[in-house]
Length: 304
Ligand SMILES: O=P(O)(O)OC[C@H]1O[C@@H](O)[C@H](O)[C@@H](O)[C@@H]1O
Image 1: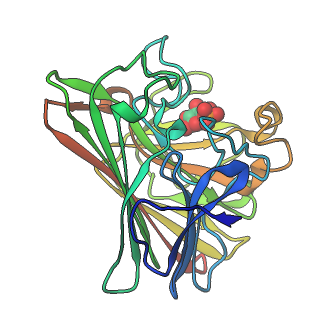
Image 2: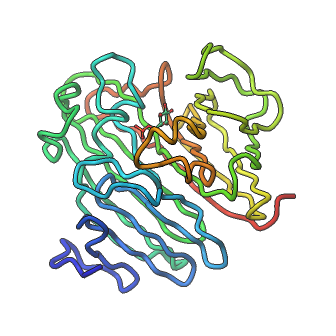
């Protein structure tokens, strides 16, 4: 990696802007409490490790790193629609925000040593990206990412046009696990969900969630979830605000083998737990109104 010339703002010593894989600009954060890497494309945290812990976010060893191509891993944003969207013309998958290069507008050290980065994207920055013709509306998106012993990612969408608009969003986190077949996800007990595999339901979650095959579910909950991972002997708490849906996804072996940026050998080491607002829980904003979706992660040793 080499330093990128002329970052647009002064950076604290703990933050560097470098040319990462594929020439994509990346922010490197290295503090006493945590380290992280954040791609300006998608304002996408790709790695985060609090001091004394193994990396918490997963990025595919097979990911592509190219301009305007989705990076497989970390916390890509879905906006202005989720996955295949609510209308047939909503392509590409997960909308255009993860394909767009955000502008770094702030980098500040918090009093506890955590580092907060602020990145911005507006409709004028996404001209020409796939999907912008489907949702050609004025917006401002501000991503605020705080790197410390807890990782906070907040996405604020403002409707800067003069009509009411609706959208779906997700902070589509890939959590690193020893083996997805051995983890439990707590916090979803009793929550209603729809499945995108087979009969959509609705169903109700009985007990903690264990994954035994391809899983693609939208849970209707604003509560936190915890990934309990005996292989890494840790619990990863996934807290959230401003999110009415939690999506859990793992493609399992056959579908992963069909995905060139994932592959049959890597699907076991991740599970997606996504803070979202999707389907009938999509967000509706009046002109000038804003909504913030926040996800935060904390890790504890042990599974008890
Ligand atoms: O391959 P993509 O576009 O990154 O999407 C991956 C998955 O993302 C999940 O969030 C969706 O629920 C799945 O339906 C989808 O397959």
